[in-house]
Image 1 (cartoon, one colour):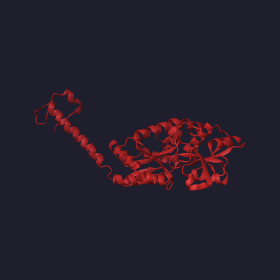
Image 2 (tube, rainbow, N blue to C red):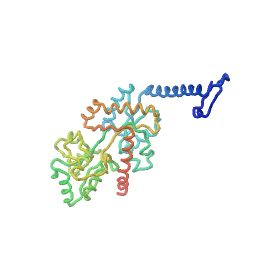
Image 3 (cartoon, one colour):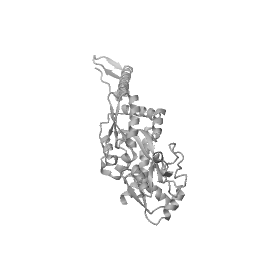
Image 4 (cartoon, rainbow, N blue to C red):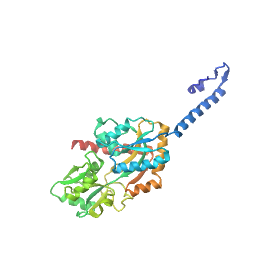
Length: 347
């Protein structure tokens, strides 16, 4: 048997085989080439053999929520491409912390992935450092969709644009009640950022576990004066509400008639961090070849017209990012939201 140390090749002139005959450097190099080919073949075969059994996708929200729905849509499409089922496992609780902690502790063999959100991956561990995982301690697969937020009021509200809303808000004597999602949530900090930019100080955030549903109901029963809505709420509630602005950099193709706060003169200056994003991630250190398989498959699925059509019909805004670009979004989100979360701790 011949044992070759590849790193030593440049320094060897001859080497003995098991039979004792001498081999020159040229012969040894040919053997090295065979060794490299074997390793490359083994790696390729490993990737081609993956997956050979079902994959689990951990979802941090309860069944029936928008996050769960989108996870099941992309899982259905990707299962067809991978030739293996992707089972969505709902692990709700702790603002998504339970799911992300379970994902971070999973075997990095490619058979466990997660549907990650800016709140679950970035905000929760930033706000509570003892949560058990770090915001950047995952491997990116792909950004899948974004969930823009809106400034929403009842249909009979006197304001019809942001300027009119700001004028109305500043003219009120009492404290305005604004509906937000749970305290440590992106809708909450985005609304606080907007109110800061607008110079509105007479307000009190009212957190709600039910998020959009509770907030809209609060508008109807008079317990809230305005709220952070989710894009597409008007499709659900019809002409009972109106959205005065969307907090993303550009208008959304889902609701193109809603102007951005930025174009109305109220730039939050947070870039992509103003929208809730959702993407697919794997435990840190996932086998690179298997990770590449997942990245390629989900890239093709998310960019497919069939997937986009199904998501659009559900009111979901598809936005794909390559893995490294997606990782960059994590960093941007940390930089923009970190100070806002620090302020939230103080208040």
